[in-house]
Length: 155
Length: 86
Image (cartoon, each protein chain N blue to C red):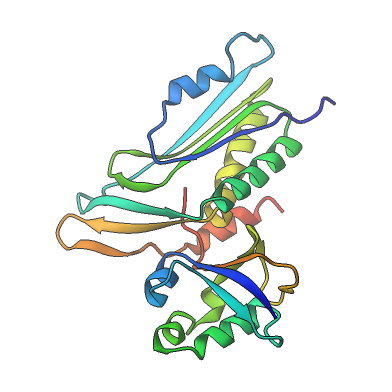
């Protein structure tokens, strides 16, 4: 088996270009049989939510995302893996997070992206605060038990 | 006695009114759990922030740790609520 690849991990305020990131993982190579991308988007919660404020822990956010991504590269034979997480004020309809996994066969890419999102949700140091259209600044989003259950599936 | 950088995030930052500070660790404060107890004694804001320590996560030098992890050699400790990214 070949050595695991090094994932690309970015934490940024700016938006990302999904097709550009997908292209980067397949361009100029013929060993890639599957490219899977997941985009997490800010919902408007039935028209109520104006935006989310994403707070993060600079330094640790990159370090923890890298640890999770490196683990995914060890578990599945990926040819490429990109993780981009935004911070700051993100309006409803805007992108929050991107995972792109590439591999020779689809299963590795599906599994790696699923694993990455489950661990990212429970371990990457980001916190969401809701801003509502009517009442302005709302409260911090509470962590969901379901997310812990999802992450436990991979143990 | 050693100095440690302490960082607070999300509602812990709001309740303590502090994003980060340097703290001289008393000799008997040698775990995140002990540091949280010590911080609670400071004033009402910290007592409120650290009211339910079970709900608080902690990291030392950018890595998740349990509340009973030794603080020996730690440069930075962070306290924060369960994460809600993604």
